[in-house]
Figure 1 (cartoon, rainbow, N blue to C red):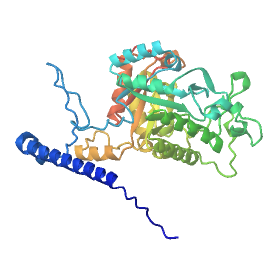
Figure 2 (tube, rainbow, N blue to C red):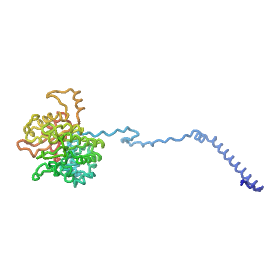
Figure 3 (spheres, rainbow, N blue to C red):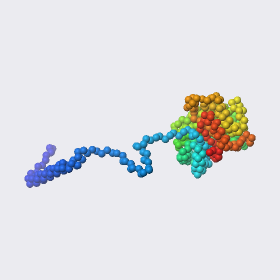
Figure 4 (spheres, rainbow, N blue to C red):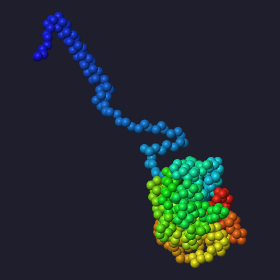
Length: 438
């Protein structure tokens, strides 16, 4: 159906509507005329409208500084520098035992004392030589092994506290020397003649203890998990100690699950390659600790015959040079020392000379002075190394072959390692006292 409109013919109503329309038009014209008059009659308004541009947004200006004050540094006004990367090893460091780390007051006192003596770093245990984990760990295997220390400290807080003093933290983990985990990782322990019985490093009457098997995948994974957690909590340098095969009695009865010849160096280097990769992923450096006796070729019990492969696999190393480890003397084709503790300079100097090749240290003939350019090239090629100095008096040596170790004996060791080309030193006093420093 076609739509249509209904027209209403109401003349009066139409006229009234027309009159209203004319009035509205007249009113609008008068308003426009008034606006035009105002526009041209008031130049500031005219200029404002003609020249107006959208305002640009600017950062608010900082208030003027008070007299004597400095301007605050902001990212927009000053270039931002990235913080310096923490060195693998500080020039000097000292070991602090867990009892000090677990007591905040004692830790504060120790840090203040060491800083006053010019010490630049602190070594402390994450997992000690008994297998106890001394920091508060979230690794599941720690709980399963019942390895968590009852008085564990907060690692992140401890790292921050050490750095607050301007010092470098060096977190240490003992690897396979572990009598705690073996009670719960039974299959991962060193075995007695391929049996299911755990081998121990001495008779039970003498306190013999079991060891984790360096050739066991789960044992390796346990250590790597601790390294990863420590790195995630902020440990920049992690020292791995106890990366070794067992030492003790009846070593010929200890077995490691091998069906062929046992390549100790190869197994340990392979493990360190894994650890290094884990550290790299988390942004931390891992250093392996070796002793001078093994590095000098006097024994292959701990690391096998290629100690250098361990340091190379880790990427950096720590060598223990303490004269005490040589006992009352050694006699061999490579090194002969009589009463080693009585002459710390000679002991460390000759020991490092014998170990130079294994540690990748610069070699030079006696009395030869290398040119500075050649010396710099050698240092560039050398892996980062630090030396552990004996800062305590031995309690195990015979009276005739021992003497108190004070500042003179400590500095003699420092002089020997630095002349051998190792600059960073770690002072070791198991009690954490360091009366001979400063």
